[in-house]
Amino acid sequence: MTRPAARVLALLEILQAGGTHSTAELTDRLGVDERTVRRYVSHLVDLDVPVDSVRGRYGGYRLAPGYRMPPLMLTDEEALAVLLGLVAGRRAGLVTTSPVAAESAAAKLHRVLPKPLAARLKALLETVDFTAPARAVTVPETEVLLRVADAARGRSPVEIGYTDRDGVRSARVVHPYGIVAHSGRWYVTAEDSTSGEVRTFRLDRVAHVAVRDGVFEVPTGFDPAAQVLAGIARTPWRYEVSVRVRGDTEAIRSRLPQGIASLEPVGTDADWVRVRFSAERLDWVPQVLTALGAPFVVEGPEELREAVRALADRLRAAADTD
Image 1: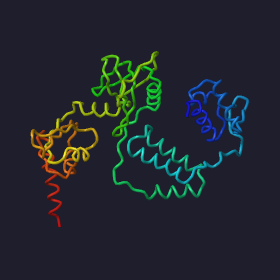
Image 2: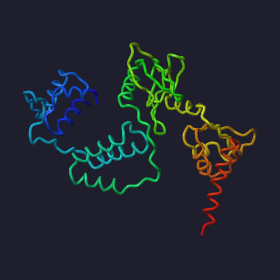
Image 3: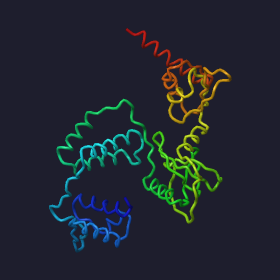
Image 4: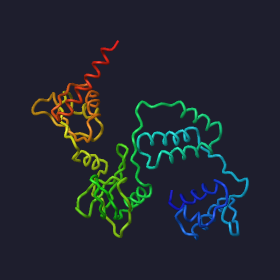
């Protein structure tokens, strides 16, 4: 959907809330000038949406009294796909808006669905449960995400204001190659004009985006997702973990969170694999290691050995409880 079309629909949503809305209010909420507001109103009128123009001191625009949008005509499968997409996206940390916005969108969808279908979907959402906990979400500004996406598609350089993990702020021009969602966060892989290197930037740390003149080319075969995973794996966190695990390399890799670790054979012993990764916290690592279902030896750090011993003590105590 183009941005003007999205704003026309946003105007319709505002008018459907009821009341008369001044031109000044609409320009502020839609981020456009008065002439554009009038053009959007004309678009709605062309679509047979009865928008009244109210003159006078308290004038503006409103929908004709008694007008209601017709029910949204989705099939059962289409409506289910939309609602479950909102729920699953929010739980997976992929929704780039606040939880309130996602819930509001679902509520609006419910309001315009035929009552029988809305009731059936409500029953599903009230009874469904999930085996995996909801992932915490770090939300970038919507405008930042959309502007970077536009620039990546159009191959346009952008200037960004960025705050790194140490709190240092800087302004730099980057060439955005692609956007990646990973573990509840959104990233952009981009060539950084300051260093000339391809880097990974967290979008929730980007304060502003301004498109600059020019066009760039993305290297042939470049994989943004692989770049993000490799960058995260190289990040110097508080702990450097090294564990020997007995088993097949691919089987072990498939049981680890994607992209967190590097695996390599232990010398000439084909039965053991060394797993290395960095971590800021260790509280989650013992559970991941036990979930591998294979013998393992912690090589370091010592804090991880203590955490594994503590987990073993808790499990032993639970097993001995009558």
